[in-house]
Length: 219
Image (cartoon, rainbow, N blue to C red; front, side):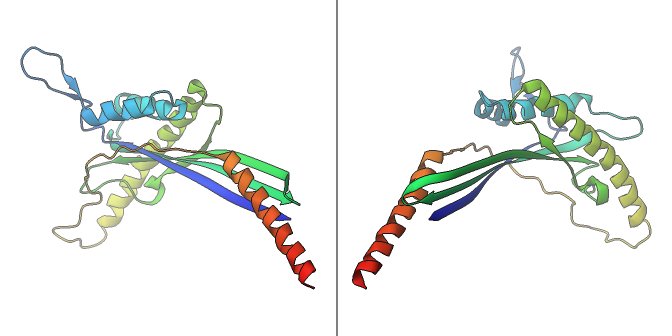
């Protein structure tokens, strides 16, 4: 008998700094040009329900995430861990058990303030929730929006607590920035092959049988 247990976790991270416009001014009388990084992200997400829902909510959060007496976010991050857990068992060269579980966990980080001093502190370090698996756009966007709204409220509380704590201590005149800027990176490469796993566990089982038979013949 041979068993194979494998967990695949695809981490997807999307981030946007809302203070940077998605439109860039073009010369002459032409219409404003879309930011190249955003265009590339949209192209990479085309046809993928989860990616499209995340990008749509990033755009919506940029314009609609506002509260009285709380400054708008300057950075929003969505990270999804899409986990598929496979368990397979074979005996005498044949697959006899095959189990598969699948779940998605979204983590949202909303930062308010600026790169020098922001809300990534205490309750402002992110909000997590479970996402639907059926790629229904409305269901996905509803959960993403709720988590984003909660993370934004937490960020407002976190920045106030952080600034209150900093007033109690003598701080460096030139402190290190809370967050570093970097160029956007876009990469999409997802591949899944369940047949290969089934062949592997069956092959290992057959090899185990042959090894056992040879050991018995030698004795």
